[in-house]
Length: 139
Image 1 (cartoon, helix red, strand yellow):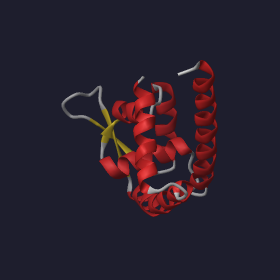
Image 2: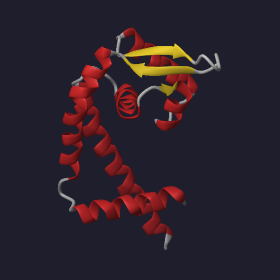
Image 3: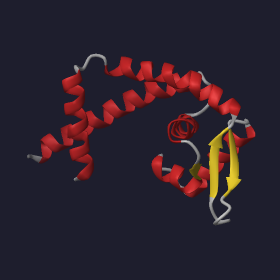
């Protein structure tokens, strides 16, 4: 492949990512949390109680950023922390009742908003897009 085509692909991918990110961030803000906070809540909603380190790895955050996000979510009452009984160095995070109510209401609406972004692609095109992006990501 030529460098010109590669650069054009990168520009198109970058612009598409920023457009999708902007639309999803706008949707998330209506729930009173940031996209990163929403990501933590969504992970806990689908995976249950998780160690902080695993959350950071899953949503690609540094430990410093993760600490800030966790403190903010805890202050708002959306999560609870607990120390692992077997290894005091490990802290688990789980949704509080307030957090579960928020994400339980918000996530289905958010999923519909994301679906609307991709509705102009057929299911086959979406699978093809996913496969192509995975291929690029592994290179």
